[in-house]
Length: 239
Image 1 (cartoon, one colour):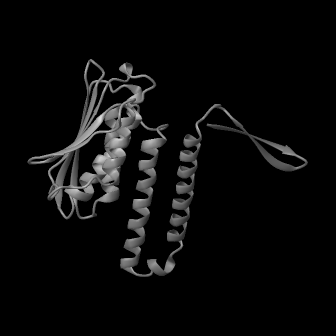
Image 2 (cartoon, helix red, strand yellow):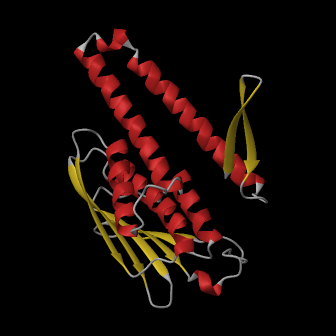
Image 3 (cartoon, helix red, strand yellow):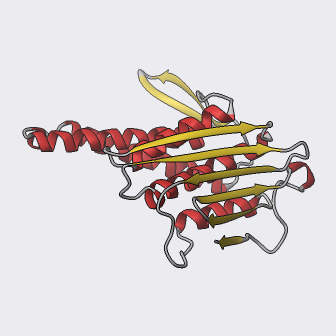
């Protein structure tokens, strides 16, 4: 985290930056820089859309510009929900609801009516909350893109349960089309699986009358350094 101090020397402003937290891993700095770069890029795209007068000259072009602006702003909201939690409610139920609704609005077609049901039981351990939100984002995104593809209406359910032993389970279900044949683990599921493995957990995808994606995490109290020391992640698809 960077602390900035501004001053004036010889009538010229200058800013002195000093690191408020020492020992930050290089990977964390890389991540913040990537996020900053993406934010700057989205701002420039929004600026150019705002001045795209030739597109706004037609009704179709004006609708396109408005839709692109809406989706870009939603993308920024998702980024804040995932990685910039200051300003977001502490309640996991509310954070999952905001994240889910924003993801659906960004990825779904404007003609679709997709309902979101969020249920939270137990207190999700603080160290697991960022990971749960990131996996939920991947699960919900897959539900919209695949399960709800070309459907006019449907429901996505999000359930987060933490037992008295501290074990946490996230389940995201949808009543969409489901997958055909033997699905491959795309980027979303691969990311979710890697995130789960980092906390000693697993994910699985099950298709019955609905598609169910599940994240299972052990209590962080029983782990050393909040990191799995085993062979890696487990990814399972069953019917």
